[in-house]
Length: 271
Image 1: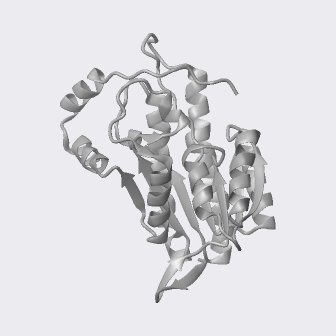
Image 2: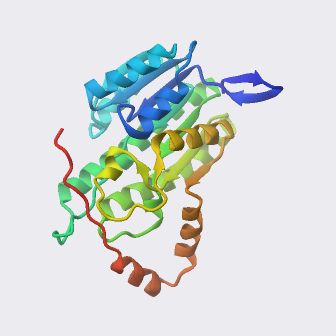
């Protein structure tokens, strides 16, 4: 693991950071947070124009930046792309921030099967595969840290968002298992489970968004968790308590509460 001395303490100081979902939201703010002279950023995103704007910001802060435009629904292309980028610039910190949010709209009875498939690929299957590809390389180097961006939705059986909450639940269990598997090799894993963050994804939701935080706030919390090598970051903290409540509550009561929940969203923008 790349480290540096600061005020007598050892802190995590990655030379190369690869961030997926870097064209907007939390991924973009993490790119700006880590941008500095002497550091290489490998930024991935689906929107070329927005990705280039983020890259330009990071270059003005002194970072060397490489960008890649791709859709994580194509897992095989993502794996090949990671291996190519890691060969050119060995990755110390891999932040898998890309994700999709979707739910059944109020007028619909079920989610679309195609949407559930896409959520499974982008929110679970491809991030898990990329984390594994990163782990393969990091284990050989005996250093590195992997961050997987989940959601507090993983803790609750949301009837209007089975595809989303299910995909994030799968990522949550994967992250825990991966962390246990890599502990002896000097490779860290941090799972991040945020509540509402002010991003394009959350702005589509038209129902209440309690305790919403800004993307820069979220980026700072995540970076601190990485530096402290925390296994799991949940924010806001209230949601950690709600997770425990969900576990201990009798199933009939929990199911009754879930069935009463209502939410809606605007259609996803094309592209």
